[in-house]
Length: 287
Image 1 (cartoon, rainbow, N blue to C red):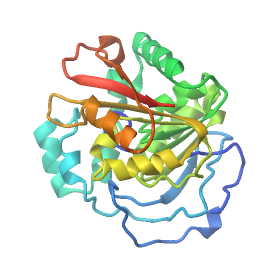
Image 2 (cartoon, rainbow, N blue to C red; image 1 turned 90 degrees about the vertical axis):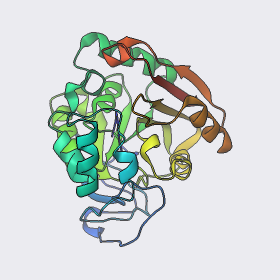
Image 3 (cartoon, one colour; image 1 turned 180 degrees about the vertical axis):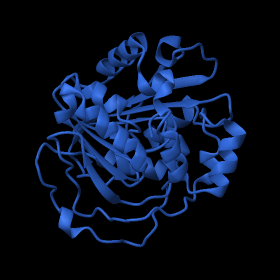
Image 4 (cartoon, rainbow, N blue to C red; image 1 turned 180 degrees about the horizontal axis):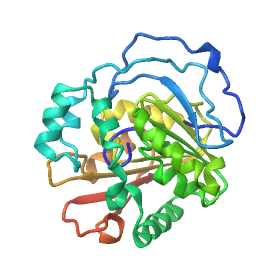
């Protein structure tokens, strides 16, 4: 989910290819690297842009406890506070915790992008990193859909994936109120195992999600599989003062071990975060 946690190449077609709404069934299996929920348990549209799901997309209808409690307990920021969040994660399903966070998630400057200056900074950054619109973007761990809509407003078709139903509901509400909402679709699913059509995205974008995965290298491989031959991978990550995260070198090495080039851009400017920061924040781009 956007600034801390998880995560659809949704195509501008009204029906999914491979998995129809009437064909969803429970699949009881685990995947490495996952934060908890596997596959799709609900498809949510923000407008006319409907989810396009891969034919092998598994489905669960109820969240299961996540193996990723340790990572989740070290999130770089939370409205409930660091130690309190750790206790909550140890006692509750992480999806429930993030569902509860949804109501106040956008209050952070870099989450909601409500400050025009912060919003403009992210718009300029992403437009400089992504290929020119139009294009299809998978926003993995989309949270409340802020970046999805920001890109849709620039002419991209965007598919957002997040395992928090409450986050996706808020993303849908934003899309419904935005003239660009018809170019965005959302799906409730695990960003570690996105149920999207492989090889079909011009851009795979994820912000502050990869670090929280149990096996980030495995997850990265699945994300790369979503890219079209000339597709661009954009990872916004950090190594935060809390001790959580991935260093820039770790992320660069991971991308290069996956057989791709990695370009590093540091993001220390307060314009992106709404405040001064002293920890390591950056974007890694692979073209």
